[in-house]
Amino acid sequence: MAVVNWQFQRFEDLAPAELYALLRLRQDVFVVEQACAYADLDGADPPSFHLSAWSAESPVAYLRVIPPEVHSSGCPSLGRICTSLSARRTGLGRDLVRRGLNFVQERWPGMDCQIGAQAYLRKFYEGFQFEVNGEAYNEDGIRHFPMRWYSK
Image (cartoon, rainbow, N blue to C red; front, top):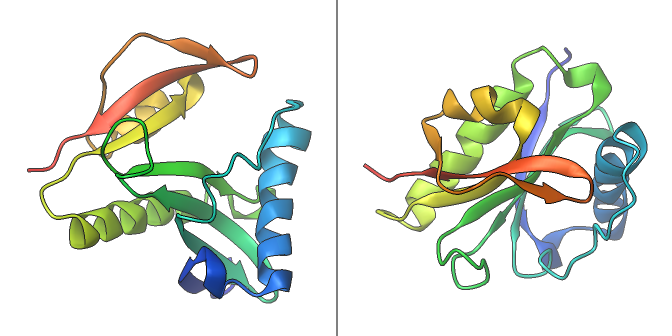
């Protein structure tokens, strides 16, 4: 993988072309690849922080951090975690989640982090010490687990 440039931005700081490219990456992964029609634009983007990795002019990895006062769990949440097809199996996804958790620890020290993990990625998130903290559920036709990373 070529050199990537990491960006952490508030919604209002994203240029229109950047936002478009990030939403396209999310659409490519969650709607097209996973053949899942769902409402990606759920209102959680404006209050969130957006972490992205760019190679050349294209995003290759992305996640958003939803603040605790917005997320239903009462703690920060990582969501819309994705990598482009070209970036998979390069370690970029692990770097992405690590950076997201580091941000949560710096921004909200002592707070846990909640995610809704697609079932096939459970072991991946357990590698970051996330633990299943509820019953499996179906979201948009895909099995998920609620998972929490507990602050040490």
